Structures are given as C-alpha cells and as structure tokens.
Image (cartoon, rainbow, N blue to C red; front, side, top):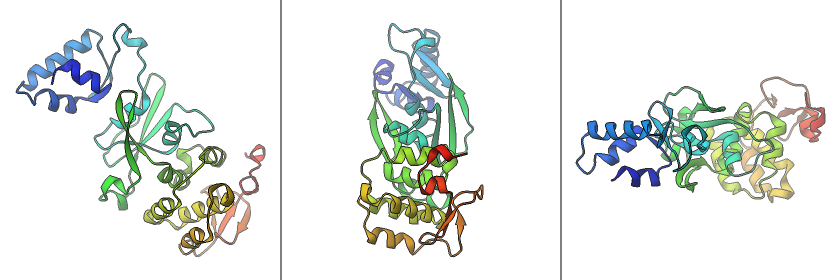
Length: 266
C-alpha cells in the first residue's frame, strides 16, 4: 500500500500497523521506517507519542493541525476503547466537556498529555479480560475519516456507576446519563451482573428505579437486579457520605442525589 493511500484511510495510526501494511507488498521495514521519517520531517505527520502518529491535512502547519482525541484514544494500544466520561462525550451526552479521555485496555500503559488533552488508561476488569470484546459492549464506528472503538451507551452507564471517579462524580453522572433518551435495558442488566459487583448492581438498580418512567423500566428489570444487591447496607460511594438508606437497594444515598438537588452538593 502506498503511504499516501494509508494516510488517507488512517488519520491516526500506530507505527506497528503502518509497518505491517506498508511491508505487505514486499518493502523492507528499513524502507518503510525511512519513508515515515521523511513524512514526519516534511510536516506531513505529527508524532503524538512514541509509536503513534497523526496525519496533517495539506496546507495546514503541523502545530496547527487538529488531532482528534477519540482516534488517539482508540489507537494508544492495539485493544484500546474510549470509555467512561469520554464515551459519553463521544456520543454527545455529557453535561460538561472534558479534555481528559479515559480508555479501556488489557495492556499496561501510562497516562500522557498531548496539546492540553490528557489520556488515561484503565485496565479492563480481570474477570472480563478473556471475554470477546472485553466483556461485550464495545463497538467500532467510523469517525472523521478513521475508526474509533468505544463502549456502548449501555456499557458506559454501568461503567460510570461502577467507577464514578472516571466521570466526575454523581452530578455529572446523573446529568449526563439523563441526556440519553433510550437504553437497551437487557444489555445494561446483563453487563452489570457480569461485572460481579453487588455495589455496582445496586447503583444501577437505584438509577434505573429513579428513572423508571423516562427509561421505560419495568418491574421485571428491577427484580433481576434486586436479586444481586449487597446483603448489608452500603454507602453510594467510598466517601461514606451521610444520607438516607434506600432499603430496596441497600444503599445509603446522599439527599442531594436522592432528590437531585445538585446545588446542595459539596
């Protein structure tokens, strides 16, 4: 494959992927690496980090080129997928706009920053790593000329309730999830139970219970979750913030979350 054709189809790409595609026609790795270096020196490419490049549109200076953060997040490892707040933001469903992008991976990686954007890896839970698509709920979709891996809205609902710190806390979570008009509730429940956390199941159940009418939640959905809630009361999060016990879910929920009075938060 010609380098120009590859760049056209891959606005952000990993060095290893370029090398595999460019040497498939019989070129040597030495030739392919030299060609990559020449494009970088000529300003045709920007190095995002070691082993990761972005294509600079013609007529644009390298330091002025826009680099899409979702494409970057999807290429930081060979299995990376946009997740948590970043996934909601990808779908246009966040209350606040962030410049921090979490991505799921089974590989060890370090956070890094690029042009004021922060990219933070999160390890896929151990019990999901051997499953296809890291436990379902990860899709690939076209985006600004490339391909992005991202968690579905259903998986993201569960993930942000499982790790609320990855979405900025309860107000951001509630206000963002309330922007989503529809969830496949069977997929939500299936994934929530696959994570194996009674606390997460209770959080999901409480959120769905609170939004029964808007999300068309049936008693049957809630009963499936109720069978897996904690045996003893648990705080909504690790801060052990005082609140009211919601016995249906065995959760101690702060009043501002219970009544969605966000001005009282903090």
